[in-house]
Picture 1 (cartoon, rainbow, N blue to C red):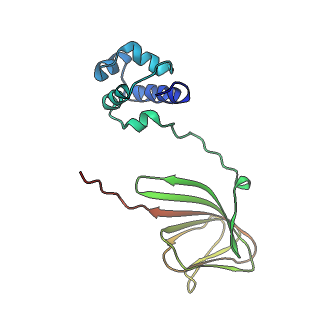
Picture 2 (picture 1 turned 90 degrees about the vertical axis):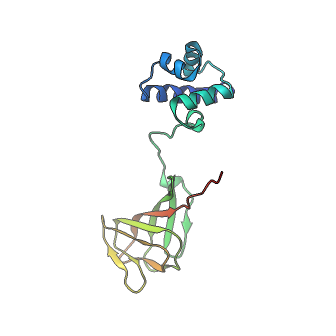
Picture 3 (picture 1 turned 135 degrees about the vertical axis):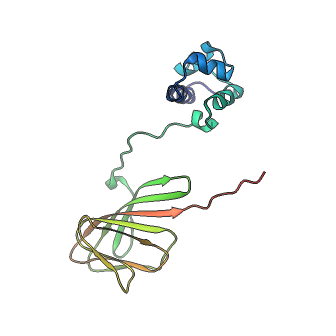
Length: 189
C-alpha cells in the first residue's frame, strides 16, 4: 500500500478499530503476529504495510480488509439543494439529495417541489414511496383515491401501481424517499 492518503486512511481505521475492540497495541501485536513497533508506525501513518500485514490485521480484528482500507463515512454530509441538478416534469421538480446503499435496500432522498396547475402521472415503478409534506397541500397516491396531505403529513405506498402528484392550492415542498429492495446475491462455492 502506498504511503500518503491511503496510509492515513489505514492509520485512522486501524487505531479506531483497535480502540473499539478494547485492545492495546501489545495485544493486537500478539493476535496479528506483527511487531508492536510496526503497529505503532501503521497507526501514525508512517508504516508501509504489505498485503500480508493488512490480512493479518483483518483476521486479528475480525473485520473485512475493506474496513481497514476504505475511507470512513463522514459524520456530517451537507448537500445544498440549490447546487443540484433538477429532474423536472410538467408538475414536479426533483433534486436527489442522497443515495443510501444499505445491505438489502437502496434509499434515495429527494427534495421534491410540486407546481400547481398540472398533475404528475406515474405509471408505476419498482420500490416504495415515502412522502412528507413540508409546505402546501398535496394530493398523492392512486389516481382514483389519492390522499390529501398538509404540512407535516406523511404517506407511504407501493410505487408499482399508477399514482399521481398534484399541488392542490399552491406550490408544495416535500421530501420524497424512494425505497428499493435489492436482490440478495447468492455466492456459490
